[in-house]
Image (cartoon, rainbow, N blue to C red):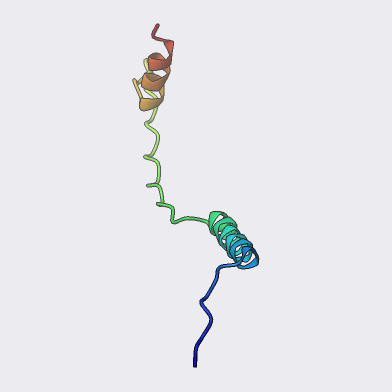
Length: 68
């Protein structure tokens, strides 16, 4: 039995592209694996006589943004 050669038609091509697009759209909506952030460290107790300024990562980041 001779089988005719399998031709890729435009209809099959567009149906396949639509399927791939639907799978890609669905995959983008599925939430990715996220790492759980460590609990923040307990805040330090402020000294009784003032002087509670500390150079934290937040302050360092601010200073970096002010550099010219």
